[in-house]
Length: 496
Ligand code: SF4
Image (cartoon, rainbow, N blue to C red; front, top):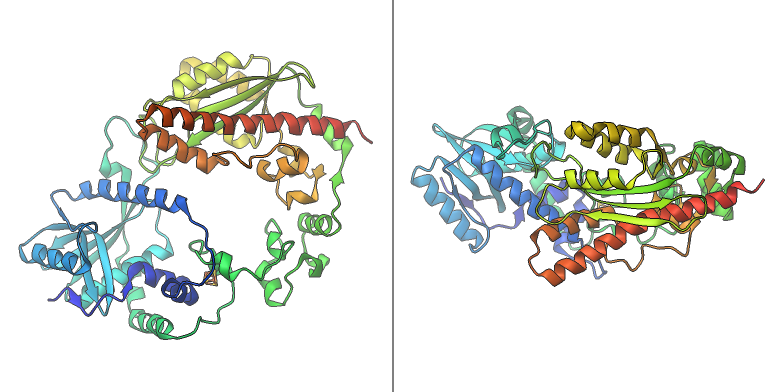
């Protein structure tokens, strides 16, 4: 048995990229002379994946790791060979190369004369791309002379509720995917040869854009390959109506060229409004919505985080845990709002303190205005279940929740700049152009979530204070945006 059959020209991730799109594989080896934006979120995701992978190793304790850092590829292969020869039962990150394909196996477990492959993912189920992933590993390990007795996908079980220390056997679920992997193995040599031929090609493969640009992953080369798509294109159409790539293949790219009768009513309204730069306003319906609100009126927004490994007792994987709120309270229409905010200090379970402060700030009789109520209501319900002594107070506020998104989702008000969306990030600039997230250090919910993680790790008090200030500013703008949008709606409601 030799764990290095040939040099290492391909890797598992390159093969998976090639399976998504041959051009993406080719461009990975021949980067275009074109500025591609950084994707800092990928680094955060990678770190999270590493944490999950290390935790899953406890399912098979006593193994030895073949580290990626600090060892060259040949050294990783040699170290793996030594561990196998010395009778190791469990190897983490075991490394193999066959047919110039280098792979690392998350957890390799000896099973008599054979071996089991356990691939760890931080998703909550098995996806097709995971099967391809393990099939590549099986192909390489078999090529190196190992017998594979079983392939498993170890993923997060999101029904697990943390109580005390993490119980790895409950946090993770393992699915035997051996049969699906075997079914994919047959075509593997031909697939690999096809990918090699692509890489050998001197010219960029003539592959046009398609649904595979975002499936299963968002491709890194979208800014390069999509350069020819103009503003106001068919890809701006929202909703599930017409199939955009069907239009594209018929040569229809600009909204101006779309046969309007092929669109559903919402898409048609979007296309027409965009083309003639015309807004749709129904003051009567806006008034009907405004009549459902009352004062005092509290504009509420939560920021939350979720992680595959639950951080606090009583939480599940990927459960949204609130760590911050912003509240703008108005006592009558047009009154200057009073602002109240909460941002958890690092390192504590923030939920009790957060809900305590929120209940103190929102009068029981107040109307609680949110933007996309499902999110805020979901958090309030979970807090009510967690703190029975506060449940009654929370239920009273829950019953008073109203949703500022309603008139935009119903298109009582639709401005062409909203590009078919009713998300607050599109609605705000269209309704209140003078108020903007531009220039803020933190400009969206994902960045706020990352900031919370960063905050919990920061030790420098000055950096911590700056980050907290940025987080407070972002969340404050979310509810201030609601105040200003409501004012604009009130002005519209006065019309005919
Ligand atoms: S953007 Fe689309 S066409 Fe271009 S390389 Fe990526 S997947 Fe292929």
